[in-house]
Image 1 (cartoon, rainbow over the protein chains, first blue to last red):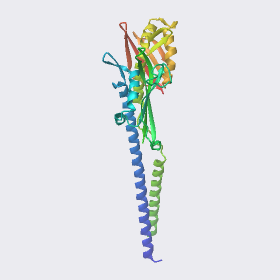
Image 2 (image 1 turned 60 degrees about the horizontal axis):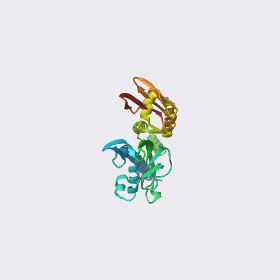
Image 3 (image 1 turned 180 degrees about the horizontal axis):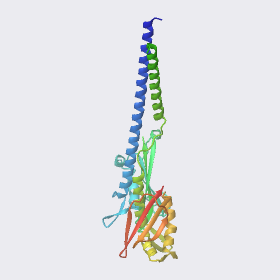
Image 4 (image 1 turned 120 degrees about the vertical axis):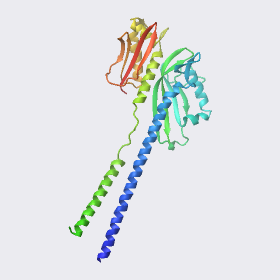
Amino acid sequence: MRKGQLQIQETILVVFIFIVLIALGLVFFYRFQLQSIQSEIQEYEHDHLSTLLVSLPESPEFSCSFRGEKGHCLDTFKLLAFSEVSGKDSSFFQRFGYMNISVYSLYPSSSVPCSSSQFNSCGVWTIYSRLPEDKHLILGKEVLDSPVSLYFPDTDSYGVGLLVVEVYGR
Amino acid sequence: MKKGQIEMIGLVLVVLLLLVGALFYLRFSFSPSTSVSSPSDLDVVRASNLLVALSHLSLSCKEEREEVSSLLVRCAHGESFCGVSSCSYLEEQLDPLIRGLGFRDYFFWVVFEDDTFFHLGACSLGIEPGTYTLFAENERYEAHFRICEL
């Protein structure tokens, strides 16, 4: 082999290694960016969920009130009324998206689901529930909960419940 | 230095660069994804909500029904409820409820005139979301809650 041919082969080898290095750098950069975007999405969803957990019990649709003055509790009759409406009205989907919002009564404890026909001695209110039609599209689920004060207007008494918000990532 | 030696050094440099690149790639491709957000802000909200919920809670015993805030006043004055001391009754009812809500290691205490007359759990280092003030019969009670471990 002549000296010129050897030099050409050497140049080709150097260029090839250089291209491999650039390709590796690009792949590494892409993966790093993807990871960073995914963690930002997670952080945003967590913040959104935390905000929802704070704002939901304060919203007039659920909070108890006495002579027009808002109290720091959830009215169980309002929860029932909202759960009846939320499944029919599509505007709630724009507000909540794909998620599950439930309230579980812990004191008094009961695992009976509440409905318009069963509103006494029940303890589970599914306020809003919307899952993606294709369950294969669900990439992840984040669940947050918080204790809440429950007001029972029929007995004029208070209980303790757990507000659970589940968000489905797509 | 001869031309061959210079080329050898160049080759070693290229191999080293490749190795460093591969190491970085492996380091980041196998690192577990971690959540960036700290849950402490939410814990404060949860503990604060718990204080409000507990103070409103109505406890029933046979025909009697009292809110926790009223029972705390009874406890401070050494009165009984449901045939037992109000403090014991509160302890019996509240501790399983608080633990059931996921607060495993906590400290709940109520102060009246600088005296801690009622407490549940015991832990010294944790998050305190603030105090909840109760006014009953012109008396001021302060309920505190501390979360040490969830």
